[in-house]
Length: 159
Image (cartoon, rainbow, N blue to C red; front, top):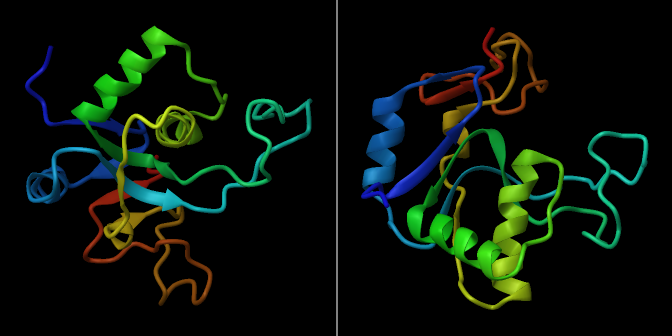
């Protein structure tokens, strides 16, 4: 029972500019929204000895459905409540990889249960810095994955 418009999840090794993140969220849709820096090509691990193993009966494809990477994400509260309601009716399939699980829950609601649609709001990826070495194009040419810039709102892997 919350008046919150979004559920936010952040890793514990981040630097966040809260004003920038909250300003963005205040200006976008508040329903059926999943926001973050998305992975559209996360490979499924089939090695049973790996802690991130996913059985083919849970997800048979070689690539996971889109999911917001772990640095930070937001989900509109209508989707959070819908996940909880659907879980109560009939448990959703589970994946051990936390980041992937959010996208997988939503995929099940859309394709397996046909109870919603969502917007993957992926237009802010350049405001995430995912590289632990505080990489910039100047310091590591062509070797940065979402490098640190003046426009960065979330820096991942800060120690």
